[in-house]
Image 1 (cartoon, rainbow, N blue to C red):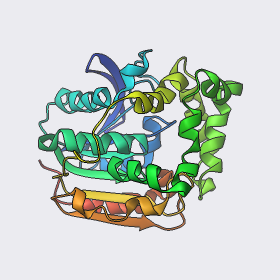
Image 2: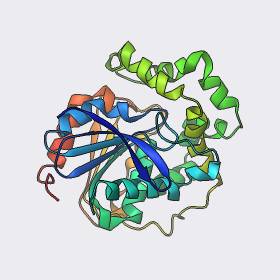
Image 3: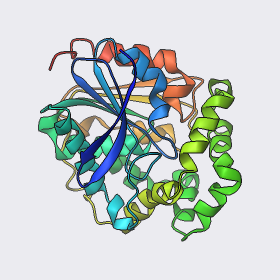
Length: 289
């Protein structure tokens, strides 16, 4: 079955989705500053057994780009995913997320346990652990310097948008451990997606909304009830491995962590074959909800 590109209405916005395959729905949520294309290797691997839905998150690439920072609050991002599951006629889905998509996946699993069949997160710490380390771990605070820079109005998007957003692809490749995983064509695609009008502003508004919003506190994190796999590239330059330690009390269902050596932040692209192997093994038996 060929890759199908369609637009789906959800939560008051129209999201572009790449869709392929039949079976239980797997929703793939990309990170910053990417788009659905970041999952190209996983779509091909999962489609023979699942109905794979890889959206451009709101604000990205071909999806709608509401202007207000408040439009990128976590409650809105979670509601987008809920609407996607329902738009494909399902009550449950397998939720997979990387980076910001992983943050959304964590929150979705907590907010909608009844809709989360299984959960896979890649190089995105659980928000409870991330907040804890931002407050107590100076090394992680330094690693997260960019989040504070992104709070400045207009300047970050202006700098990232120079030369038709070529700096986006350069940043992705330079921060990778396996740089050869990104071809020139891959980087051109990601650059073009980031260069769409309003895309960089919208992507940065995720960080701005996170800093301004009032979300769950560390005392009120619901435990995750879906079987969960955390995949973690060990050489991530922005997120320390210590963020993954001591997570077991956050779950009531089976939880496992797999560390991937010789791999940076862009795990599903840097070590695509290995990630696909772990994904298929974890999802074995989940092709029919």
